[in-house]
Structures are given as C-alpha cells and as structure tokens.
Amino acid sequence: MMKKANLIMLGAPGSGKGTRAAALCEVLGVEQISTGDLFRHNISEGTELGKLAKSYMDKGELVPDDVTAAMLEDRLKQPDTKKGFILDGFPRTIRQAEMLDKMLSDLGEKITAVIYLDVPDEEIIRRISGRRICKSCQASYHVSFTPPMHEGRCDKCDSELVIRDDDKPETVKKRLEVFKSTTFPLVKYYEDKHLLVTIPPELSKAGAVADMRELARKLNLI
Ligand code: AMP
Image 1 (cartoon, rainbow, N blue to C red):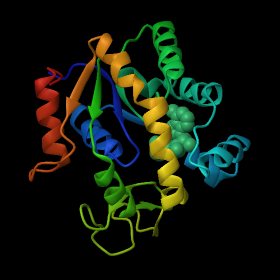
Image 2 (image 1 turned 120 degrees about the vertical axis):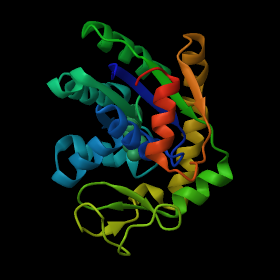
Image 3 (image 1 turned 180 degrees about the vertical axis):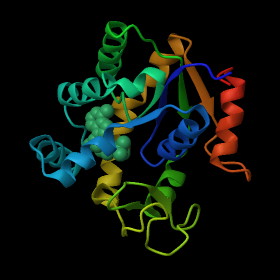
Image 4 (image 1 turned 90 degrees about the horizontal axis):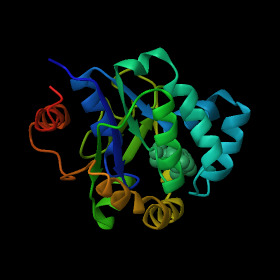
C-alpha cells in the first residue's frame, strides 16, 4: 500500500537533492517540484518571470521569497500534486518555510518529512564541477558518477548536455555561502518540528532508486 507523501528534499546546491527526489518520485509515484527547474523553464521560454529570475540566478543569489513562493503556490494548486509531491529546492529561507506552512494549511495539506542530505563542501565542489544538464528536459548527469549512455547527449530526449550557467566556479562559491547563511537554519527549523530525517550523501552500489525505496520503507511510506 502506497501512502500519500508530501516531502521536502533539503541540502546544499549539488548535494544530490535532484537525483534523490527523482528516484523517490519513481518509487512513490508522486510529482517532483523543483523551483530551480521551474525558473530554468521560464528562462528558456523567455517569460518575464524567467528574466527576473535569471538576474538573481546568474549571480548565485536567491530569487526573492515572494516571487518564488507565488510560483510554487501556482504549481501546488495543480491537481497532479494531490497524490503527493517532493519539493526539490524549496524552501530555501525560514520565511519561505513559513509561507509554505501557510500554503499547505490553506490546501488542507501538511509536510510528511524533510529529507536532509549532509554533504561536505569539498564533495559539493567535486559534484558540481562534473554536473551536466539537458538543455531541453533538464535531466541531470555527472560526467563520472552518473554519465549518460552517449557522451554529451541526454538519455531521455537525446538533446545536448550543457553546464548550467550558475555551475561556474565563481557562482558556486556564492551559492554555497548563501546556503550556509540562509538555507542551513532550516535544518533546525524542521528538527524542532520533528520532521527532519538525515540521510547519507553517498549512494549505495544498488543506486538511487533502490536507496530511496529503502528510505520510503523506513519512513513507512510503502
Ligand atoms: P537549484 O536548481 O535548486 O540549484 O536552483 C538554482 C537557482 O534558482 C538558485 O541558485 C536560485 O537562484 C534559484 N532558486 C531556486 N529555488 C529557489 C528558492 N526556493 N528561493 C529562491 N531562489 C531559488
């Protein structure tokens, strides 16, 4: 029996949130909602929201809370989230967490658990420097850890793989600073609410889907 789950994936940029969120979605049959992907989609479509978001993202800064929360609220109101969801990249500030609590209570929903990936800085830099994303569907790869079947091409849609603009070394440094000063306090916020579950940053040999299936069992979600 599959239980409904509303989960948050928390961790520094490059900690592997996206990979685990995608695997957990596969296991639980719920939607992955990545605010970073929603912004990148808006940027590629050339929307006003995309233009605004890009001006912050290129500097490694956070997009303002109100803009990000409004975009997320629109997404959460779509019917496919009724079966559950995994937030990847939201919240990133205490204020966003408070806004999320309000949004969910208005929708009659609540958070099931917050999954935290605790990854050392050196490891983050190593992961980000090898990260490549699909220009078209945003699927993420790592040149050594999770390479695509054909170099430089997406396994899912065969489009070109590129380095994210904000994965350049200067921007990564800034993003890590922002994580420590602004996002890290969420660990305590959710610990105090007894929602935090810390998981190891490495994947086992069995891979992301098997690891996330085990986590889902531990959390009594399957
Ligand atoms: P990500 O793909 O999650 O690493 O996000 C890439 C960039 O998008 C971040 O560095 C921010 O500039 C922006 N972004 C994504 N999610 C949020 C959020 N919850 N709040 C503010 N900015 C965000």
